[in-house]
Image 1 (cartoon, rainbow, N blue to C red):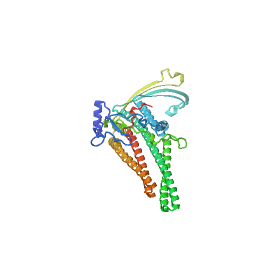
Image 2: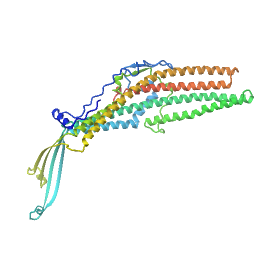
Image 3: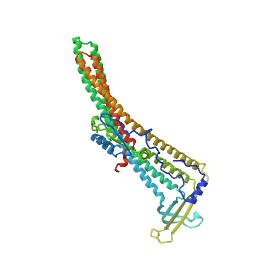
Image 4: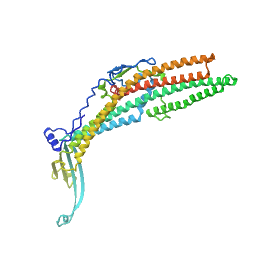
Length: 484
């Protein structure tokens, strides 16, 4: 989208009189970037298998309209359905769309004549002395009916550009509502996944706490018998307290997630609680659609909104340009007057008029000229912001594609670490029972196993959330969704 220049008003006037065109730049939809892939080199084909699932990317496949259903969680579906039905933010975005649509319908009225009717009744005492005549004053009635028609000729297309801008504002509101829809579904999916991860981490920590309590009790018995030093009891108690201290933090994160889900669903926390979801109950989508780069700019709501903003700014240049040129207005009026209401249609008091006026701004102190320059600068700004939005969108898709590939690698490594920590814990425990290892050895093995278990849970949740991020980065599949 190139910025319009600043031709002199005389040149604009000559061109428009000859061609009868609408002044200002004609907006053309920006071409899609020529890139054929999102990442450097070639896009990854998928991720390696981790936790029993490998994800494969499907270039050119379309994103499903209800992409969250690919996780096969009825509780997740229910939470999103509840939010889509009650979220105030989505309701506000839809109201804004309706408002812009009605503003557009209102704007179309400028293409029609304005017709006005008036009726007046006057009772007056008139004295001839007011105009230099002698004689007594008299009282009379005057009844008047009139109608007028006004029509502004849109010679230079300023009104057309104004309506064009209103139409672009509808597109802005439409894309904003779609973006709100996508953001809402994405936030709920991410929050449900995070809550499930917090709950799984809390459950794993409680299991370890029970094991630690048994070890502390046994160590206390042995310390009283003099078979182990009391420092072993203190070390075990310290480790136990550390694990117990992590539970309130996890419970707080779970509560915050529940509160956030309630707010997103349009409820107060006391009124509604989202159905609980376990991390193990979620299914990681194995086949992931990846739109071609040229389609991304026609799918993402933020890009569509930025494009519509640029369109509206382009139309404002035309409006500001037309304001510098002559305006033509046609008007007509008919009226009838009588001293008696019954004589209004007798014919003696009828009158009519037809007027045509043309006005030309000659000197405005530079106001109109600089308003047009400001409109041109606004169009340049909107064009630059559009390009910036496109670049950010391509960056986000590339980041998510790489992240999914690396998530699988990280999860695979964390799973190997967990398997090794589990085997080490079993071996140390067996050696301890055989008298070949100390409590400190078993304490260290417990801590390593717990850390590995938490790391696997976090890596699993991150893989799920990056999968959600891919659906969001590609636009969320709204174009495949039935109209509400």
